[in-house]
Length: 327
Image 1 (cartoon, rainbow, N blue to C red):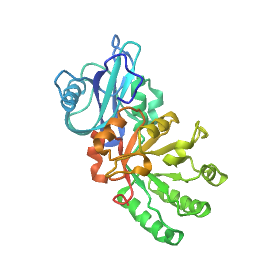
Image 2 (cartoon, rainbow, N blue to C red; image 1 turned 180 degrees about the vertical axis):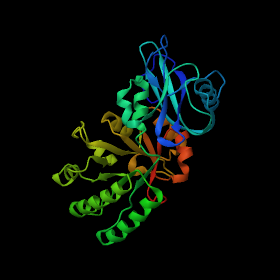
Image 3 (cartoon, rainbow, N blue to C red; image 1 turned 30 degrees about the vertical axis):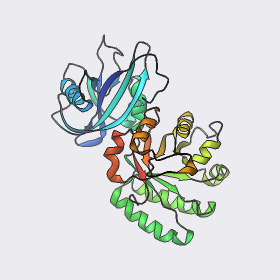
Image 4 (cartoon, rainbow, N blue to C red; image 1 turned 90 degrees about the horizontal axis):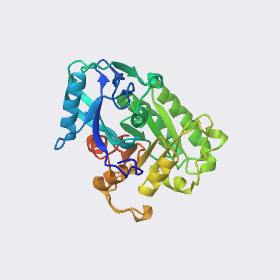
């Protein structure tokens, strides 16, 4: 569960499908709850309750066949959370449908529509669906740049240009503590321009709060802070226009990232003991145990590769992030 406040009632397990239009992946399928139903007239991801003894995937197949007429052939977990309504608690288990046959429609007489993300604000959704809608803006893979010196900057930019043409990363975290602020700013501007040409967004990161919050970086609205800086905060000191993300290594740091309304968090999947960070070899089991206690979207990083996306999704991550294999 991602909402630790829900303790009184046993949540009803509900699976839902994130269905992309077969000809335009930026459009998503929604159905409208009918009059007389719980949360009537609200738009939602189609789905329904998991029956006793039924697997999550088979429940998804059955519900989407009944509600929308499509046959799901493959799907990946996307995002899950527990939400408490006045009369019930639900565990919303949203899956990203990867392959299906048939034409999606309101098979049970309910209204249906395909929406772009910019249209979401014009439609009323259940409260439980709102974090999922927000998470749709996040990519499945996040590139973190490697450390490099000022002398390596030119070759780094050349490599990055080719890399973006090949992989089309939607988000790039520029994290290089070997550079002074002025050199970092110069490269950040150039990286931002390359990202813009490839429909991507750049996230900047500085180890010191005074540097990150200086006039040098006023034109950048996506900031990333490391766990040390996160742990030093007593309140959210960011301007409302700033979209913040953070690196975390344990439950306490992840709790702080959620408290400060971070857009997402990076949570490490250690392969060995890391005494300096106060963490031990947690592996996927512990990773899943921690992520299920929070609503904040989490990227798995440290010890993961792009090919680990499927495993990461099943363990509660929204995606994977890294440097070596990604770079």
